[in-house]
Image (tube, rainbow, N blue to C red; front, top):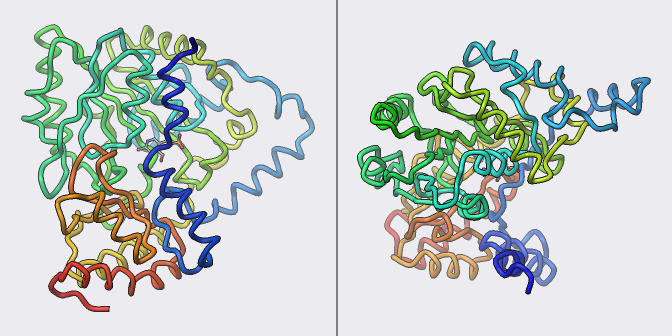
Length: 399
Ligand code: PLP
């Protein structure tokens, strides 16, 4: 018999993918412009012009073998040095090329890191709501995901509750800020509080690693800042991806940065290399590795997402919905007007609005709206949101 867990994972689509597929069918039935698909987090803004130009330059270079050939398993040395220099100039100091492992995006950064750290039965604490694939990634690495609900209303990490969830099996805490699906950015004070808790565990002989999943680091609006985890805690690892910041999710490029201040950083880096090898994730796409040094620090035009957020959040509040304050990423988390978020998302479908119920993110009673869509679609969708609000008799509802 073949591996039944894999059969099950491959046969059952995620709720998000299910909704996306439904949207495709519905668009074929009633016309693309009549379906308001807020299901997927696929960036809608093109990559910055520098990306295309850099790719042309790289491809017109004289050595096709260097462009398309294997790099070192952990990534090209000069690319890793450039990433390290960038981190040192922006966020932290002391990072070297041998703290960096180039990956196929954040998903690979996470699976490699979890496989590097976990022994069978280890637990990984995360804050709910969380990216649903965390459970799959942890379980495949032999561990167990333990979700601790964020504080009511703000969805910030509840440090006391995290403290209560720590057991002798806790190996890591996995944070994602700006957060998918809530859009919440965890402020420095809260990060410092959590790190004090983890340091206290270390003093009692239990090392707990802190993993920061950061595909949305650059997607912040207003004066929100995303604290760099290495400045707060030595036993930390950053899992980064260029998928969202540069609108390159299909190209599969990112990196892992192991904090050089970690007492056993050489061993952890060796484990990262070993897990990358065992998972077959060596040598991230060479062309996109070579692109990285030329575009570090650039982003797509994120002002589009900001305008979308402002327009949509204001309209939803006007209609009487309650939304969680979103400082980053490109997601709005809206409270369901009825306790059952699945029923809310189902009712939204009647108005051709495709929004993701919160159950798969580990909390009840909300739905996620991905607003990385065209401003035009946001505008056209507002009457439907108004009608949805009216169907619940929400006060302030108009449209
Ligand atoms: N982590 C979070 C929180 C995400 O939202 C995503 C993708 O949406 C990923 C990881 C995976 O990112 P990538 O496409 O870079 O693998």
